[in-house]
Amino acid sequence: MKNIDEKQLEEDVQYRFKYICEFMGFGEDDIKTILSAAELLAPIVPGLVDEVYKKLFDFDCTKRHFVPRQDGYDGLVPNSLVELTLDRIHPQVEFRKQHLGKYFVRLVTGPYDAKMVKYLDAVGKMHTNQLGNKEIDIPLVQMNSLMGFVSDAILNAILGMDIPQESKVATVRAFNKLLWIQQDLISRHYVA
Image 1: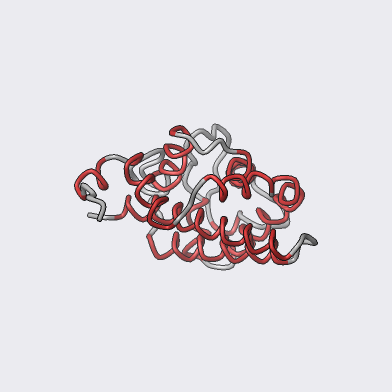
Image 2 (image 1 turned 90 degrees about the vertical axis):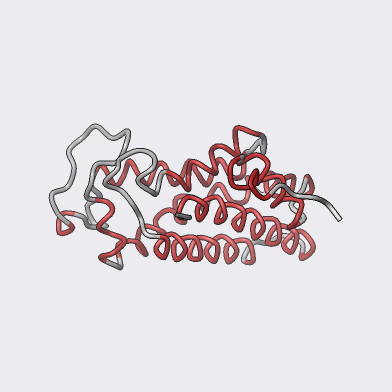
């Protein structure tokens, strides 16, 4: 039986990541599988980003988070939800869509090192008032819903790829583990 320092799990994101990976069996083979999927997934990233934003704009509770100024964005911000449409993308929304596209690309280009772990953790933190704009504090239920949607979209895309069944299964399993790790690194920032 392995001894785990539970206090360190909460304080040290690298230790936490290592523990989760070991517990779930996320290892080098999964990382290689994810990185090898880059060529197949790269062409679908723009469509995936569009799907995510369409879903986010379907609900007022998720769309409202696009009105406050995004950290790092210097242009004009929308005055209301009415200004935000998918027909004519507001520059701030385009800025955020680009960030989501870069996130997807980063997942499939690695490397899965300490810097990546910090990045995945920051993805969780930036959706709370702990990092970036303090006005942007997305409730956990919305983050859980979003990650569930993203997971389903990615796994569905993989299942539709013309690759051998063995590769398809390995890719689905690797991404499933990765997205659960990401979800943990999101939800940890919501613990009081």
